[in-house]
Amino acid sequence: MSDASALRRRPELRCTAEISRYQRAWFAALRERVADGEPFAVLSADSPHEIYRAMDIPYVVVQWWSSLIAAKQLGPRYLSTLASAGYPDTLEQYNALPFGELLADDPGTAPWGGLPRPTILQGALSSDSMRQLYETWARRSGAAFYPLERSVDVRWKVEADWWEQLPEHWDEFLAAERLDLLTDELTGLIHSLERATGRRFDETSFAEAMRLSNEQARLNRGTRDLVARTVPAPVSAGETMPAVMIPQWHRGSGWARDAARLLNAEIRERVEEGVAAHPGERLRLMWLGRGLWSSLGLYQHFQERHDAVFVWSMYLGLAADGYLRSFDGGRDPLRALAARFVPVGEELRMPTWSSAWHLKEAKLHRIDGVVSLGEEDFFSVRRLEEAGIPVLSVRANNVDRRTWSEAELTDLVDRFIEERVWPARHERSA
Image 1 (cartoon, rainbow, N blue to C red):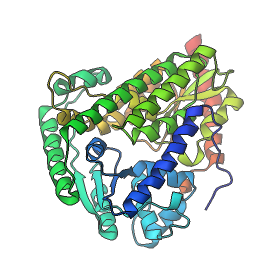
Image 2 (cartoon, one colour):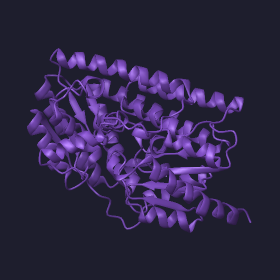
Image 3 (cartoon, helix red, strand yellow):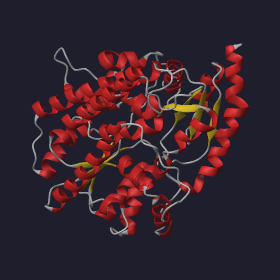
């Protein structure tokens, strides 16, 4: 199933194509490893990938595979398959698409030959329906399911500069009880994986994976800062989304670190040479929420129409601010990994956490207007609007094409720019 109206991304960077080629070759090799009988894990984005990296257990991240399904315009088909099988098709679509592919059981039309059947499923229980989804998926696929609990910060107000505190001072900023809980769960996970796969957890390999992922995060922070301070922007969010997301799911590997370095170097080169995503840039836009993987060209669509460039998405933003956790001074790298994932939901969507961060990023990037799709964004909208930055909230799901279309979305954004972004820009300039 395809959609002729899908807006294709216009390439801006050489490295994005190189990263995409690597991903296709890597996935073909992964399919061969699984066919040869190796264990295979499917993990949620908020699972501790670095443990699997250290144990050399091949894995695919649910959200990446769902993004590929969406890019191939197969989302509606797999959601329909879920509904036909009696399962919900309007809950957790971003997580449920690979399960829909499993039920469709048609490798000939699945992306890249299809996702192999997992022997391990892992997801953090971030919503009421997540356990039911993963347990059902595990039962239908024959996989073992290893859930991780999600704790919540109980403070009424969190310091506004968490993005500065967490990299070096996570053991002071986060509650010890939350770190204790997840560290214990990760220790239990390691023992379970050792029993299930026969592979040993090597502390030296794990520390190296953590070191590499920290180096990757520092590079991403430098890249984010380059984009933020350069006007006109050297690259658009539609380009950085795939260039950042793919290496993020290889976190802890030398290739992922090198891919982040390649991205940083090419953007730095563009800044030095004065190359811009859109030389006529007059407005800078921010995208809150998950990416429109089936229509990445939409982010570039408004450049010619309004001289408006989407310069920010959560993919580079969180890669810059959300993952770095130093473990120098004898600190336990496993506890540092727990500190990486304890607050991940709060960073993106918890009041005082996300609203302060979104405002900080908007100011850093000199944002004129924000489009928010599919987010519970009340507090962020309030903070941004109070700062004079208008927000368009769209109630839709990024991978469920039944909830939006290019025509409707471009019309909404067109009117938003004309009726709210330009007037707000003029008012701030007066």
